[in-house]
Each structure stands twice: as structure tokens, then as C-alpha cells.
Image (cartoon, rainbow, N blue to C red; front, top):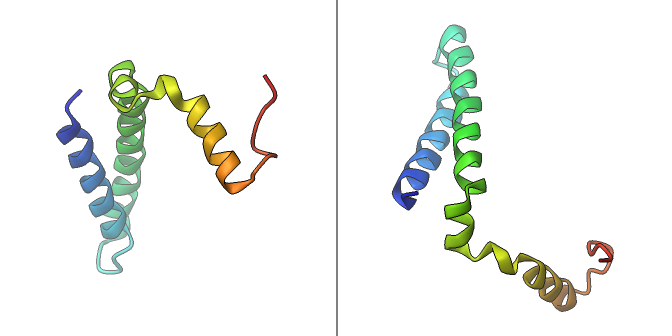
Length: 82
């Protein structure tokens, strides 16, 4: 996994969203851009869920980070009992 690929996809996604909101873009192109947006989201999510990315961000510690955040913000309802 290259972080640059993920950043590039996110940048492209932002462009597609902006372009699909542009009133000067014809409906056919907007329809195509909406499909591209779905594919970009799928690709980005696949990268984020990949083992290599999870290792990169230290996902194995996610439970303790959630618990710490809950303690700091006093949000008890978001914690599941284990």
C-alpha cells in the first residue's frame, strides 16, 4: 500500500464531487461522474480496510483508543460491553 495512492484517490474523489455539482456539466457526464464516485469510494474503502493500512495506522490498538476517547469526552453510550 502506498499512501500516495490513497491521497491521490481522495484528491480525485474531491474533484469528481465538485465537478458533479457544477451546473455547467451536462447530465450525462454527471451520471458518469456519479458512477465514478461510487467506484472511487469502493477503492478507497478497500485500501483503508486492507491489513497493510491497518498495520500502518496501528489499528490493533483501536479498542484502547476508543476507550480513552470515551473517558476523555465522557461518552459512555458508545462503548460496547465486552
